Image (cartoon, rainbow, N blue to C red; front, side):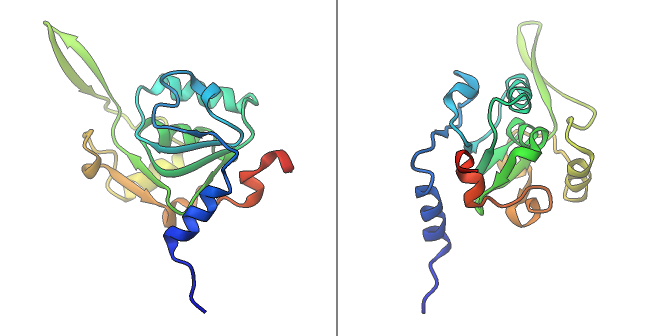
Length: 171
């Protein structure tokens, strides 16, 4: 008997989410958690300014959502968000977390200047240790040069999603 391919399995799992609103890459920039269903499915999110992600984490910890599903890329502030709400996060087989050093763009003498933070971003210590062991937090905003944690490694920190995670209202 032939086993279904990885992509077919992913497709079937995503179809099981048909009643769930999937938060697009801009899910925080224009409405926060209001645009995210239950469970909150975060898909292909490349991050952005850190404050909205920390606010969303605070809201989820306060009960705004019971479950967060991370699928595909979760980079930069998105990965920090996932770490902050880790007890409520599950990951899909396609998940990749992406890390880099934090920075701020400021204006000096009429020019935009990028200032890289000198310390580690505020992740949990076990995530910081993993990132340091796999290349550190690079000073780059180029995806190809960032440190990536694929699902095989991410499973040490986050459980894989099950039907229980995908349909929390049935729990």
